[in-house]
Image (cartoon, rainbow over the protein chains, first blue to last red):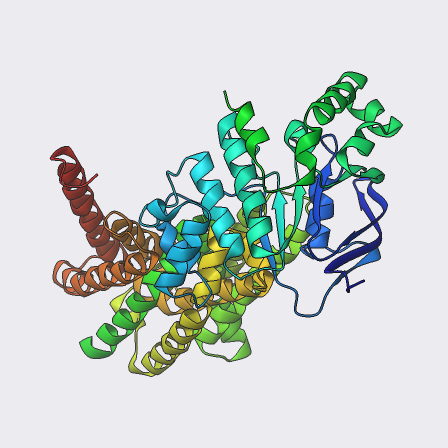
Length: 251
Length: 265
């Protein structure tokens, strides 16, 4: 068993009197793909921010493996229109990437045609792909994504999740993602962690879907829908490379 | 007499360009105003402590920035409100202190609106040295500052010490304020930062071109303002700012015209 990349132990975070994170422990190892789900206000983003060490908790600890590089895609990104910033310049900010490396990076997240455009004025989907390229710019061991597809339309969401899948395979990195898109999350064989201040349940999507706490949280109907969906796509679960199930869903 | 004045003005213009960009990008206009107001208090404090005006003003600026950053972490009032309280407190304390110390109204007026008489050969060394150091520091911080201006969270996650950078940016602004108070005056310092940078924004596609463009615009305003002020016998600060506004309007018209003619999109 190799050393974990990121390990949170017994995190407690209190905000305005309430306990946002209640004794949360989480381990992210090499080649893990964990999706964090939970209702609004469950503390998902707060947990992510602690795992990134953007904030520190009053008790508990977050340990990063020595020399760990994290690529981060923040939930909110708003650039002031007064700042002239072409995509290419943004990708090269505060690092030593060469022009060729930038072009290569942009091609990887499907945004090489945006390089000369200003950051202000990109569409939601374009901006997310640029931010993903930025998250990859330090050749990270871990990608941490905070609701990366929340402002995209359905086809944009599919495209974005496919991109992350492809990166997970190609780059041999680990992914920790906060997501609201249950139907996308539950469609993969990966590990799901369901958070509501404490960790309610975790494991493969089909086992989480049967968990009483999950059913209570997201409704019986949702759980059944997941179970049906899991069942009808069971043949896909043995190989991650096959994205045909995603294409089938396109409108 | 004109030479130290010119050199001071050019050194300040060089720094005002890029710093003005950050004031625009980070929406720190009100902060710049507050910082400038604290300079008046700095003059009084400097006199009491037997220090030069510039040192007093930089100290006042640091005090102002620290107070603001600390009050902001308390999350009791909005930054906007805190700035309002601090800025006007500093201005009032400054005027009261200067009156008690026996300053004439005319002298206070010169600090508020700038004056040719304010700049001496002695202070030139301070200002040029200060601007040189500030410019060096700014160039070192530039990539990190740009990243945190684009996204503070990203910068933080990528290891930029954002709180330190933010404080250093405020310190740099304090230096520019301390240098520029004599020339453009407390009331108009923010415009020397904002207007040239905004003019450059109209033609720039890269952050660096906007910064350099800002410096050029500020320098032109200073170079033009000095003889205008002397020839027409009008206060120096308003003369300089009037010229920068005129340049802004010209560039804006040119841009709108070019857009209309579909020369640029």
